Image (cartoon, rainbow over the protein chains, first blue to last red):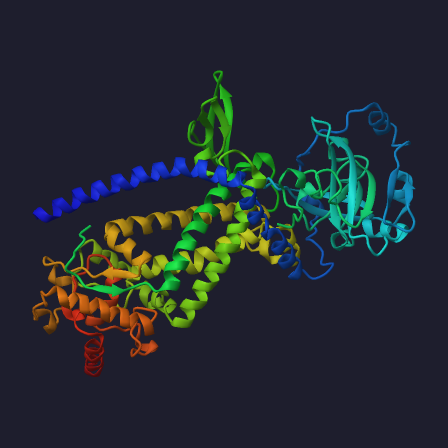
Amino acid sequence: MKRNSSVISRRKILLGALQATGLLLLSGCENLFNQLHQNKKVLSLLESVEGLNRRLLRLVTRKNKLAQEFSEKDISRYFKPNGNPPPFNMQYRINATSGWPLWRLEVGGLVKQPGKFSLEEIKALPARAQITRHDCVEGWSAIAKWKGVPLSEIMKLVQPQPQARYVVFYCMDTDEEGNNFYESIDLHDASHPQTILAYEMNDQPLPVQHGAPLRLRVETQLGYKMAKYIQRVEFVADYKQIARGRGGYWEDRGYEWYAGI
Amino acid sequence: MTFNLMGSLIYRHNRITRCTHWINALALLILFMSGLQIFNAYPHLHWGSKAEPEEAFFSIYAATEDGEIRGYTQFFGWRVETTGLFGVQHTEMGPFPRAFPSWVTIPGYFWLAGGRRWHFFFAWLFALNGLLYLIYNLASGHLRKFLLTPKDITKILPMILYYLRLRRESPQEGEYNPLQKMAYTGALLVLTPLIVLSGLALSPQLNVAFNWLPAMFGGRQSARAFHFLFTFFFAAFTFGHIVMVVATGLLNNMRSIVTGWYREKQSSESPGTLQPLNPSTLEPLDPETSSSLSLRAEGLKRSEDDSDTERPDVAPEKANIQTPEEQSINGSKNEDKSLNPENLQGSEDNSEGKRSNDEKK
């Protein structure tokens, strides 16, 4: 079996060579992919499937089909308050401790009837309560009960003009560099029955760390779309002229505008 | 590992198989690495719909113990220190908390948004490529050759015994042996759809469109755990696949999946038990190199009208039941099979041989 032994040694040599190339490839890969990712053309190619995702996923979803609603016993014991810390200014603090007397929701932009609403006025509008699952882009999910006014009710009052395509939410929270949080959704998601401006969480007034006094719930999207600490709603034809022009705080930092996936 | 120059070249993989194979390999590698980047954003797995922090059954994390930062991997109550590999990575700037190390993630640095971009782009490529592969192989009837049937299941044990040299005769019929059928059917037709479905079950929009999607895995968090678990099953399959490629002749296998041409092995020391003795085996081989050139030409000719290794004159129904000499032609995907020199003759001769053999049955 002389031939056999030579087969084994050759096999060893080849396996060794394969291992070496494997290690080289791994360290090379990291640099290669990092460089590719810095390349604007590569990045825009990668980003090109976002529109495909949006169209396909919406195509297969029946219009106004509801997200699964859970029961009281499914509510999470712990709900991670993600994102920026709550606004840290005197006005917000005073408002938060005294029931939002000075806070107003300003709704404007491409609408026929711009308006300002106090929290009491918003609570007087038709309300919807839902126990839904919040899916964070990081990977975790948490279930809570939300109560608020459907965005469609607000739309009935302010009457968006035909050229309005997006709803932009301007928020009171900022990051360490002072950039204000903002988000946008289109009218397709804005008119979904479960899309609400929530002022209650688990039968309690919306806690400060979860976006008091008012936050957005869009149950067909990931958590980062659901703006907290909302103070102004604007109907626009395009979001390109806002901040870095990609439709939201996280979008300006590389995340997809379409967060249904 | 023998790279025999004496064997004949056959056209084993057509253009579609070769292209889809390499696109698939690239897509899977990037999906795997970008997937680990996405996992790093929340390196815990849960069962059910929601993620209560204390209920994670699998976690990779960093903790400071004795004034030192250490990486741990935890599975239920079972915990191992994995500093340097999982949980904490040694970097130029000292130990750094990180679930999967930078050299297995895309991008290398921590960036969830970037990982998602790569993942979704290559998910499309993977899906479209896989669809092309599936449609082509369904249409050509190739899929049926490695589809595990109940009859094959009974042959799995005999095949293992055969490999362990505890059984003299191979229970193999057709191009793929029962173990290969099990591996390919499992990986391609069971595991792959499950990976795709568990991935789609993570999309909030698709959860609205299809309530059953997360439910079939026990909830969105379970779907995430399955997506991760199935991926590692598939990685194990890929590892086995690569080991087999190396073990059965790396250069020859690589040539066949790059160029399509595979050199059939001719081993003089083949054990007689591997192949039933065929009268034609006793015929001497043509030692002339010119004959192998003409064979190559013949193979080329065949490749034009026949996209698969299957011959056009063999009815699809019969493709599964193969005669010994057909095995020696098509069965070249199998391990160290001795080759019966009959395939050195023209393909027309072979098909005639098959017909007469069928008549005998």
